Image 1: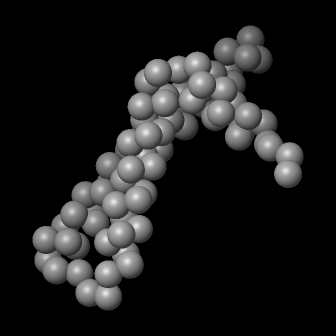
Image 2: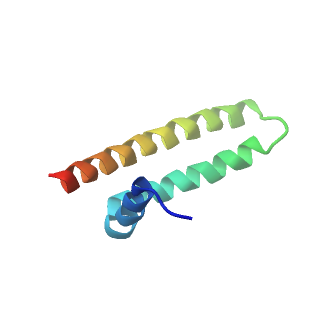
Length: 78
């Protein structure tokens, strides 16, 4: 399977940029925790709050990573 330019850039940043690697690791950790919560048949009130908190934090990390990808793309073009 061939990787897209976006996937290539993401892999490059994971290999070469400590901050991007840290953000990607946290994003994956939040995704794993969300998967575990979503696998439960019923969520308690506290679990629902945690699910909402994790989704917001995961989205914030994704936005930060997208900004870094965009900045890296613009530097490659320049």
